[in-house]
Image (cartoon, rainbow, N blue to C red):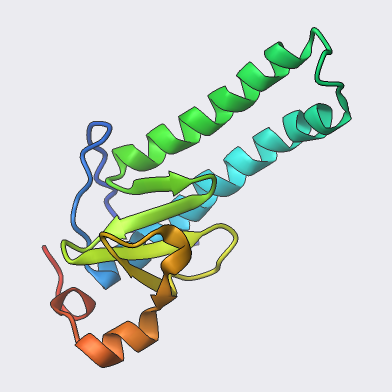
Length: 141
């Protein structure tokens, strides 16, 4: 099995970095792995919460553990320089807008402007064809 030569840049929380498309694609397997692991940790809590009554005294404890898993997931991704938009929704900032990804998508296939909501994402191929942005062609390295 070949070892990866990818170096992952880990920084402080809430300090997004700018990505080129190739850098975002290179980091995506790591992002997917972290997200898949967090989702599997969250599944038992979601199962319990769906079956609990609102007034169940154990509910607050289960909710706190649920929130901890989500917070840890978001913190890990923020340390990689990503912008966390929602549960399993992340953005790679290009400086001009965001390359958007939502688990379980298998590739980065969407883009949105900084001022747009996550649900206003456009096809990445369409944006590249229309705008031919630098981030789609060059590396910051």
